[in-house]
Image 1: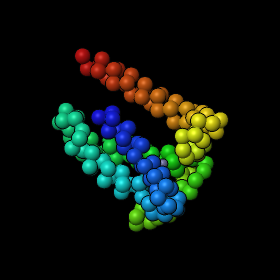
Image 2: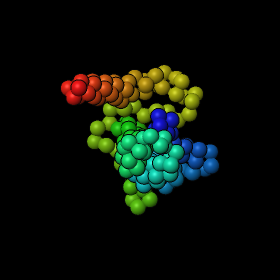
Image 3: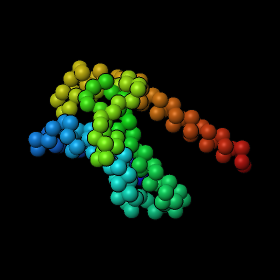
Length: 156
Ligand SMILES: [Zn+2]
């Protein structure tokens, strides 16, 4: 299940392959275009649903497992929409190809490609992600973990 969730979070950036094929950044199939849309996230979630562990589907039901996959895929576009660079995210593509940013944009945009990412600029990006993504996610995860233990302890 973790592998599928990670796949949902990284697959939207497969659109960078379009640069090699001559697809412009701002095109429907360009970077942060259709593959970052809510429609793509929904289709991805539905297509990966049969690959999820049977135990998850039995305990949570198809709808909740699909929702988790959808939220994982959507999180990519949301975080891209919180960056300080690029053209924004086509959340509503293909129906509306307008590129959007969120009102809060504390994340530094990541350079495209491995070599630029392994520079001091990449380190700068990672620092902003640690502060605005990783630390809050860790705190929420720990709070959820302790909440479950607390609730589980009360019921016994
Ligand atoms: Zn992206």
